Amino acid sequence: MNSNEDETAGTGATSSPHDRHHAERRRARRDAAKAARGGHADDRLYLYGIHAVRHALENPQRNKIRLLATKNALTRLELDPQLLASLAVEEALPRQLDQLVGTDAVHQGVVLETRPLVPARLGDLGNSNLLLALDQVTDPHNVGAMLRSAIAFDAGAVITTSRHSPAQSGVLAKAASGALDMIDLIEVRNLTEALEELSGLGYATIGLDSEGEAELEAVADSAAKGSGKIALVVGAEGKGLRQKTRATCAALARLDMPGAIKSLNVSNAAALSLYVARRALERGGKVS
Image (cartoon, rainbow, N blue to C red):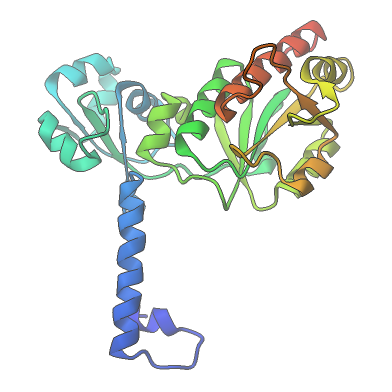
């Protein structure tokens, strides 16, 4: 089927030159938007930064097309010689890398051309006692930072929705500082159903809410002494948890702030909550 037929498949209509023109413009806009996020029309990605690229290269699940690096950056990557020998490596100048990822990207002299990782499914979930679920958090910097925090506090997976979540990109991977290739990123179509499934698996689903009746420390301690498994649920910056998500969580908990500012950036709130939950699980004697 050619591209013109594809635009009108199933409509019973023949596309006119006017229709094709607008279809092509729509595709061009989609492709341009994807390129701006660090992706490309054929699903290629350009990951950049020493940590992000090193962990991507060391991930056996990652489809690696080619590595572009300055001579100095290639040394800084400190790659295993056997791994390096298996890669298509091209020496590049910093300005050439700027052309690939943009002059605003802090590429540190290294860019990996690759493809997105295949998202894991809830059925792939391992035996971790701590998870982080994101309710329509769309900013790639925040999601990347939360992936990094999830790794730091030994969470087993980060759960996102198929829609209203950022695509894998160079920006997200750089913010994650390698964590994108170190943790399962599970994609679900319906977060409410996923939380219900997690509850059935023994997880205490705790939604972070500034209006929560109890402090997170108390709720996490109770969960640790009970099932010993916690799934933290974080809402979008500004909007917080959606009403249906709030209603599905087993408990809503707040982080009490003693200072003049009573709220945190969503990625900072997630990091603090992961710390509280991990400490609670350790005190409960159930460490993964």
